[in-house]
Image (cartoon, rainbow, N blue to C red; front, side, top):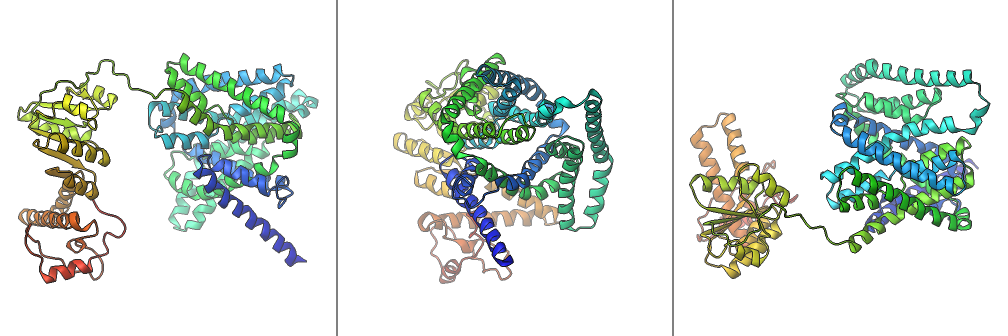
Length: 615
């Protein structure tokens, strides 16, 4: 019987892991994100799906530790310096947006007949945007480091912080607290404050010395156990004080945010956080009562639309009031209009405190999930229904009738350096680029850069490519450089073209496109560093120069072989550090016949490039 019970438990464990492993890649592939994959997996294997699990509450209780560890990691990133740099966005934009949206969504609940406390909890939960979905979309669009991306991240940061006081507020809104006397309530507040104060004192004076002692023991497993002890111990301390486990973990993270062991702690906790948080979402999916959703589908549909529209309206109004443009405000509104994963935590706490019923919790959970599913589709609709964003050219001169002796296409860090020898010699240089922000920044340093896309034939003529004595292609994208080179070869074949190449593959393509001279962007700088390393080790200057020249000769010969034989050709010309290195082929002058010994060396090759083609 015990064996049968163990076998049944093993089946459930395998089903749990298999559901996540199968669902998450599928959902990420179709652009819906890993969280929705976990939720769908939970629905399928839960009591309202295949019925493999019948007690989702037990799994949910354990999986809540994933949220606890998530907040600990958020706390680790809350360094005072970072908070100070983002203070205006976090505590200005963030507070304004969260406050206004919470008010609007609470009014939706009140106006549709729900009690104030339940309306507030429902609205506040929906205000907490899905950090995972938004961050993934920002990363895919390349907006993480842009100003508008930083503003969205600041709001997400404030919302992550807001879950802590919201969980505490749920306890005060609980109807069970009505029979408590003022003395009992005051005592409870003092115990909570005392728990926080005790945790802060312990973290301030004990954590770093303890981790220093443990680090000296050089036992990795002990450090991992200590990291888990800090997270769970802090969570337990505040839970015993009548507050939330999440608040305790967050405070512990903040206390260790400037510790020398911060990154070690984050690395130790991250695997447990990821697994448990995934398990949490699966458990939430299991908890979704499909029968209730089916019975209340009109209610779910109404509140999904009402909440998303009202939240988007609040986000847009805040964005416009604080100086963002129409398009940025619209994008932010659509991107952040959904509810998020922390709403599940808030609704679970509200249900346990009796603020909302089981049926209301199921409906609210369904509303959140549906809103998360709709977000990627809303982004797609926004892109198709709104015109493509164009850069403002106000104050920017467009390339037209330029007459410089040399035309530089692309004025990033590479193009800026390339221009210096020419300008110091008094050569007339025309510069074009298609990045407005870069053009404006270059003007502050005394450069006149014209707006123009070098990959367009009409722009090349307007920029004077047909009159130039030389054209320098300094763009950072290899395919764009090749496209420009091909246009120049077909239209102005007599004008010398010199180009920046990202890697050897781009170099070969540029040679085939007729570019007379190509420079791999890291080649010479890497040789310079290697030469400095030899000098540091005591090598004479003449010997260093001889070695570097030998490297250049070998690289040129190898490149010649690769043009006709592909990237794998000429591998024997590279010096490897394998225990028994292949013999080096002697340098060969261009056009010189290859000796049989050299052919044997090239046929044998080395293993140095199997992991990737060096630049």
